[in-house]
Image 1: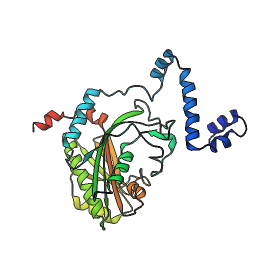
Image 2: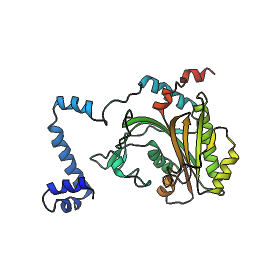
Image 3: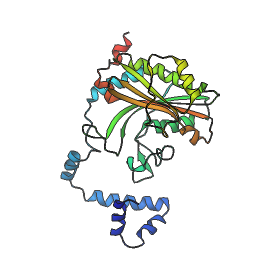
Image 4: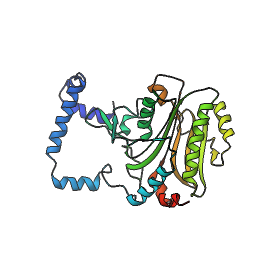
Length: 295
């Protein structure tokens, strides 16, 4: 228990923690809804303006929505027709991130009901892919979403931003062939997206998988650049991690995960995720979808 948590519990009557812990899920939800209702009842219109100015969670993003919309339209335009486009809900089941990834729930904005605000479309798409694998041998899904994250990113960076994500899932056929096939699909897409950008690269790092290194080398893509010194993402990604860049600008991230394997309780499941920041893409003067269609 953190010191902040201990301070809160010290303000409550003895036995409060045990009593709350003993509530059923529906009883706890009723309690939290009542607390939220009472707190909302004390809010005045002037409070809304103050919070709008001060609260990083609610302040509008700095990116021009017209430019973001044009960049996003191009991303959809280039997407292969066999990739299922998904309109994700603003919320996902509670534990969507922490149930499959080594991250803290403190980084997620948790709601009063048993849901959390979507913080990464790849997690939600992995659930969609796991469900679709019931009827398909190989699944590819995509989504664009305005995500909200609780951690502080630093000066000039907002707590919410727009991501465009791809997730692919299939059953392993051995010798890294499935991973190579999924990676080739993602690379083909990102190659088209990044074509107008100078010095665009997909940098990859192998985590203890010689077989996967061989398969990636066989792809021989000019977009691929190995980044052997990277250690960030180890434990979150398995086999290989990706980093999408254009010069000094980091556009996105990705890699292989165990998420669909965990969800389907099948160690043979393979899952590749990759995503880019639409906000950063548009800032690099990406062409519109109309320009693409005229080529």
